[in-house]
Image (cartoon, rainbow, N blue to C red):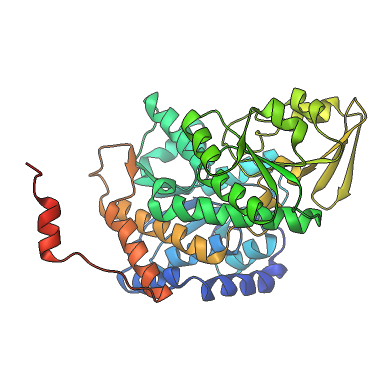
Length: 416
């Protein structure tokens, strides 16, 4: 018997209530849970999962377990793990290795334990499971059929591994599915980031200048919601096409070193490192607030900020104040980690219902095609995207047109 590594099993009832709330608001996952209970697509399979360990992830775990999977679960960020949710999964007999506020050593130990039980399917969020399998736990690679990656940052890491010929098993790019990035990244991030900021700071957004670093789908959502809250929005970008898009969407576009002088509140959403650095800190207004909505805590250079600060103190829960050498103060939310999860509850349940339905069906696809997939990086099959979209429309009570045979014939004919 495997002993879960959690903080306190007595917290399970609270976590159970959170999971039940998610279940009630996730009709897609409920329908898959019912289907999987009958078909058992994961019978005899072990799934290692590392996603932000809160109630929506917990319900995904239960859906996969309903399909016969033996689950090994950890978090993908020490500050986003909710101890009561981890306890609820452990109390129900799942193998859980995580707690809130884990040190780097503890976090890595939890990942190591999650991967040390011959997992067949890997469900990753940011690439930490895949990285450890390829660098430290290579003996476990022989058991892996394939995996699924949840987020942009993880896919960037996978592309680099694959380019270097290091990726050893197929990975489905879940983040790139239309039913994931068009809704989760844009509407989910857009709402949950501001939920985290507003509940943490208790400050007004209207009238302030918000600087959004990065104008991918997540950045679009953050900028859109900032505008809706009454802010003046400035976008920084390195991609000229996205910069034009931001400009035509009505936002000011400029380099970070210029935006640093104007911003009242900064949100990084790039998936890259070193987006806001020492020269930017020194240009900021008194009282500027910084936060990150990219996967890792490297977008705001927290290491250098700590080094140059003459005083560091906690102002409120999840807000640290830094006194700069010039005497001005800047404030960082959630230690520069994901503000929507480390200082909030993450994306709305209805949004994650779609994303996690893609995850569950992608994992099923890997099992059904075990040994037959020759590519290491795989797009989510179009039929999976469409199945999720059609189910979602049914649950929303929305009907759409369908092509007639004549229209299909017209579209399939050559123009010549």
